[in-house]
Image 1: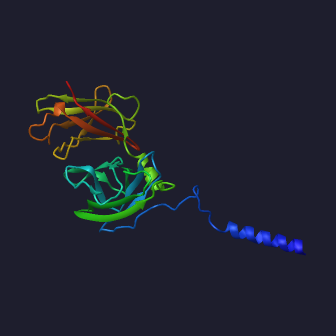
Image 2: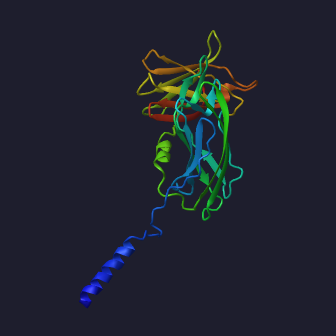
Image 3: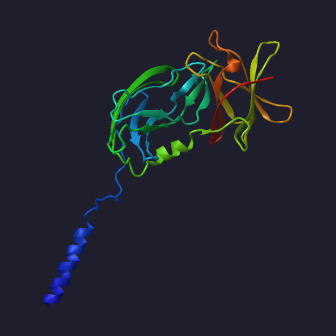
Length: 285
């Protein structure tokens, strides 16, 4: 009887311990996310991800009402690019925003660049002291549009421990996978930019970009200058004599006095679910 009682007590103690969550260095933590801020037409929050070397990763999650859209870092013919103010953050040396590949949309007579669905815009933070938490404070000003665009703003707060979040939330992992891969002109594979040339013509100079893509009908290209003073137009898509995809845009929207032939431009080539980004000057022809 005593032996049976001791066995029962050991079993009860084991069950009680099993019911208590284990908290330790290897224990999984809940996903780290801020509260939602909900301007009209959207909802915004910060999410934290697993560390990437010395960097803290995270994302700005923007949910859009069906039928609404928001803009990329370069909005195209119209629109307002998002503005990130991290000045209230603590233990931050640098924050790099990593933009997912955007899409072109017709505004009715003009074209803009951005996102027509919910989007997570990732970022990477380098802390001043890697052994201390990062206190993120973001004031985000952006625009959301249905038929008419309207300004939106959100104030977001999230404290991230020194070892980041574990694990990264799936939407952040997916967003990081859509950030264009940095490459060079002439790189092998698809998508890739084979050449970017400045050509003279009867209607004035134009930029011709030859691309290697898997689906020419869906591929798109966006070209940016080095700062916000530049407003290069969106290119048209053509088929070159060798069957390759060529994007052409007139030299327009260049600041007065700027030498486009000597300026490094940024090319973002989107080919379905894949995208590449190239920073390079034009070659002459």
